[in-house]
Length: 96
Image 1 (cartoon, rainbow, N blue to C red):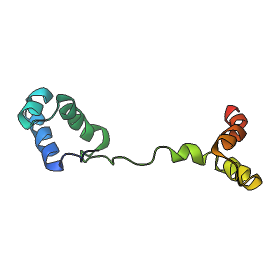
Image 2 (image 1 turned 180 degrees about the vertical axis):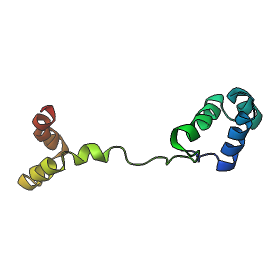
Image 3 (image 1 turned 30 degrees about the horizontal axis):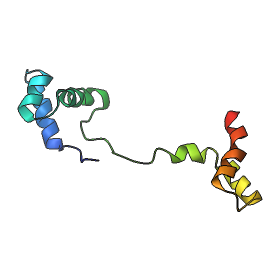
């Protein structure tokens, strides 16, 4: 994943749009995508800041954590359970 573009560039693009040119013209001038310039221009009104948002992060563990108690109970019951057996054990709980 690439790094976010600098706050300096963001502020220059937003300043250019505020002076009158369209987002497309400002994007062309600074070498960014028109959609990026439009998003950057809208961000201060929406959130109060144009700083880059956090990138990446864990998006899967929260789904597993909701079933943590069932997983731990199944593994205590049968510690040598395979992944396929664990999935079969959890299937009825996921349907409800």
